[in-house]
Image (cartoon, rainbow, N blue to C red; front, top):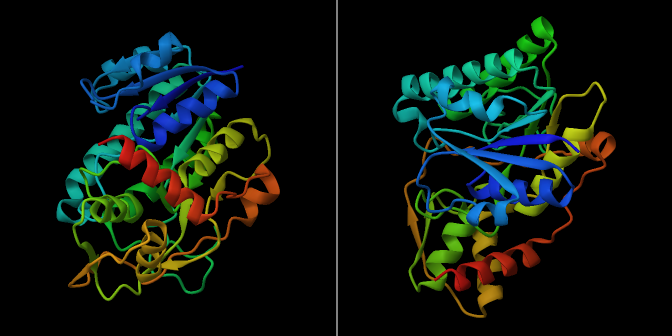
Length: 309
């Protein structure tokens, strides 16, 4: 049993990770912003130790890091679609904040950091699909660049200080508790608009292809990465199956049993035409694979959306 700190543990992926770590028998701490309306259900009945504060302030972070065996870093201050608007802010908050975190982890002898990178942005426009961990990383948004920079600093701290780490690169994660206020995540946003009787908005002609992995599958990769003792440190967490936005709309229509109106908007330069991940390394070393079919994941997400209204 390890003492696990989840940075961003009150959010979408983080709250599912907290649940998975508790089921695995670990002691769990959560650090997130104060006054979040998505705070972990009254600290899961006291099973979770809560810390709140500013991720960029090491004085706020230090009490949470002290005594932790492992740190799961899921915090990001920006989104892919807006990170190019202010790259300096993106770097100052994400990269510098993460460097302060790494220094705290070194100082307090944290055994391992598991970092949530981005399989959807770090590769940029792929030369072939599915994309492997060894393919070029040429992101076209600042978000992907800051994720790669943090990956490199993790390697540096391992080389200089022996701070162990694992990097996980999930693609488009979806499922219950997905944030809708940021309009980030096609599955949640599309389903929500369809349930409200509003047209689904698509940037471009709907031909953009993405790899969608259900959130409970994704967090199992994080839990397995905590225990893995091999040399490999970077893993994709994809399904290996691509789905166009048009095909996603069609799947939602089948689920709801009715047509859904679609509004097409001008394409965005930040959207690569296709992103599908090869997760063979995760399968081979972590014994991980995505097991939830899209139809089942959509059904569960739809039930959550209906129940949360």
